[in-house]
Amino acid sequence: MPAVGDARTSTRPLPSPRTADRPDAGRGDRPTGASRRRLRRGARWLLALALVLTALNLRPAISGLGPLLEEVRTGLGMGGTVAGLLTSVPALCFALFGGVAPRLARRLGPVTVVAAGTAAITLGLALRPLAPNTAVFLGCTALALAGIAVANVLLPMVVKGWFPDRQGTMTGLYSMALALGTAGAAAVTVPLAQRLGGDWRPGLLVWALPAAIALACWAVTLRRGVPRPSPEALAGSSPDPAGAPVRTPDEPGSTGSRPLRRSPTALALMLFFGLQSTAAYVTMGWMPQIFRDAGVPAVTSGLLLAVIMGMGVPLAFVLPRLAVRLPHQGPLVTLLGLCGLAGYIGLWLAPAQGAWAWAVLLGISGCAFPVALAMIGLRARTPAGVGRLSGFAQSGGYLLAVPGPLIIGALQETTGGWDVPLLLLTALMVLQIAVGVRAGRPGVVEDGA
Image 1 (cartoon, one colour):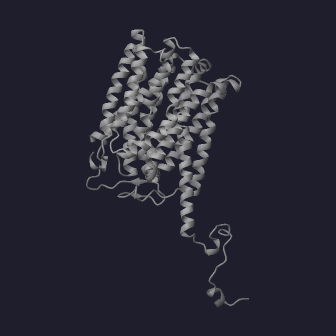
Image 2 (cartoon, one colour; image 1 turned 90 degrees about the horizontal axis):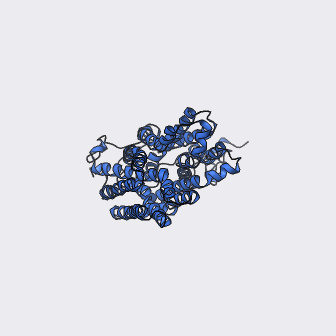
Image 3 (cartoon, helix red, strand yellow; image 1 turned 45 degrees about the horizontal axis):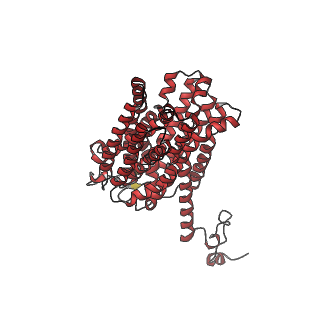
């Protein structure tokens, strides 16, 4: 038996069973600096993957329902008024539930709340096809939209806190995933339903699968431990050691608890977000009908909508990266708005003859959404500030977008054509350019911008 002194003079302790399988197990129980860096990088990449997979699931609950809405109405005995309101319910839910997201993030941490939101999306999409009546169907839809709302608001906060050196790239990646989910659900939901027996229920149920995959990725991320937020992004703030609740202290020049409605930049961002959301929901709800009323076949009208939505897949990755490199995002906002104006004018002059060109122009204009997300990240200094600004701009903006599709439909029914609705959309696009240029000015809301 070795002497006690022999054990004390041993310079190389045996690895414990818990550490024997680690690369640095032979060098003691504490990992080396290189090992810690590898673990941090792995956790950061896993967080990025969870973020992108979540973004992929932020629109199929909406865009996947439209192509099957007639079958859903027939199956549930849903009235026309309720079906018409479904075009505005997403924006209303985003406004209501998105407003509480920053407060939840301060209490529980943005990563935890986004993971919980993904769970709500998964549960809502899984239960919705099983609904026996309209009330249960609407309740399940609201559950999914609540999860989408909190993720909408907090993803820019997660990017600011954990990827400050890659804001443009990460915003572009998750914006591209969001656009891909939107266009993909619109394009393949009907073929999937046909292959699965022709019933609308399996066609909607299938979209719970990618949501479940994203939820599993969040579960692994939380189990392995969320990496600390970046120190450079948290300068002047006090993060939780796990990078969860993030608070901004009341410092000279900080907004602290000052209402963002007093900030011209925050107000401009809210208006810009609301106007581009109005254009997006009008496009998703009415654009196929505009083309059909001009004589374009129904199948082609659906493909034109897919083109409009699909333009965001490549451009949503490029434009945020460009936006963060520009000192002033006004020129980019103006360029996108001019494409929208050209598309609306084309629809007024020759809707059928130049349908594909107008679809491309409106698709480019629709990429104001990822640019708005990028600007939210740029107009606040800390993750807490981004969370507050994101909640303010998105909740208020979505609330402004609620009446848009209803007003356009009412104008079309009253006038018997699309000239007056297109004139209104043109005027709103001019206003979108103006407030977007103001929101694109350099500065952060903490400095009273």
